[in-house]
Picture 1 (cartoon, rainbow, N blue to C red):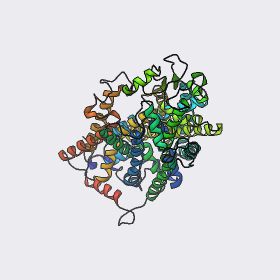
Picture 2 (cartoon, rainbow, N blue to C red):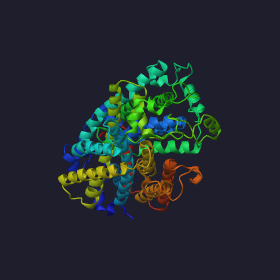
Picture 3 (cartoon, one colour):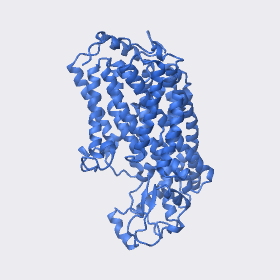
Picture 4 (cartoon, rainbow, N blue to C red):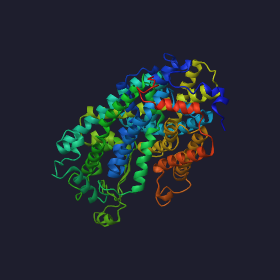
Length: 591
């Protein structure tokens, strides 16, 4: 166990607030540029870059697809991610910026005066970030494969090459201004098609209002029309809640606190000049995020309705379209392998219905249907295919492709920077080779980022689920490991290194074990110890929802350990107090 700070000279100099930066990382140095863009990013620019960094392929490409095919039940993605960002902006970002470090493990290692705590934080960061980046590379591969008309693997390789060029060579400054441009692209790309489709279906140009408007063709409210056509095909109604309420609550909470513990988002708040700028950039980021997140439910609902009316142009009680007469968007996506049909009853038509619905089985048999003939429909394609489904102009289709790529690549770059800085700064510089030169540290950062790209590309070729599902696992890992340590580091001045280390190990270990049990080694199906079904889950808790339970175990283990050991040294408690002093109060320092 690590002893008091006065017994550890190698840690004593670390326990100082932000105004005492290490000289080798001081303003203007190349490592400062690489890690934190020299702490000179304007709050509005940082807000847009943060929004792009956070609104990943999961938000742009996958979230609307998950909402489209599940409905109300998957609104948890919206609630959890948005609520989590509010939590991050209000509770964590200003204090972390005031502490003045460059990475999350840097904060944890210094606050808990422990190399062990730093190493555990690095391990948690790497596990979470690698899992997260798989979802981004998967989304980028989907976009490139369709719009360059190549297979999914080739699309993934192209995405990797693009990220390598501007992330490895540019560092944080290059990533920041690239993400600013990417935000502009992704928000325009997401909004314009939604406006067109909302006008087509409801006559209302605002998708947020169109979702609750009247469906022009039927005269019914849009959501009522969607419920009707889904239930006529044996699916559950779109607006009902059909899952476990416990899982819905835990999953939302897991996404919320996971968001607040995301290292690649937190490090964005280290790039602004002052603490007050961290608050401002958080506010701007919320505005920029809301512009997309308020549109996503409309995109999902309208896309699902368009798919059904494409297959059943005369109504769901009539014959579906002939396979030979399928629209171009279906033919185009079939080439990627992400959409596939199988004519089960050899009638040359495309039957699309819920074959698992026993009540609808009699209707299907009466119509001569032998099963749902859309045997592959990757939900990640929905947003990208949406303009084609609605038969919008080619330039709109190209725009949505650019937005999807911007979303995936911007977050991938942020994650890769978090990975590289954890390895070069927290492992090499701060732990194993404290005398490494600035040039050597920078080289290590770039090499580690390049290796991370290779690993993410390899794993992205066989992802464990849709982009948003993979990302949800990463959020659970962040929720169970980093978030509690950061919260206790800021708001519990007596929390010591032993408590933080034990808490992180228990939270992360329990979550990884639970995920491994039901999803397999690195979430590969077939390597799991128990079947991934609700009947086998512990208390019915899904692996995607377990992050909230892991966080609770983290807190409990940390405080039990604190009760059995000595609290943090007085000097550390004074440091924590200084972080929490409001601006303008006696003794407050604005960094």
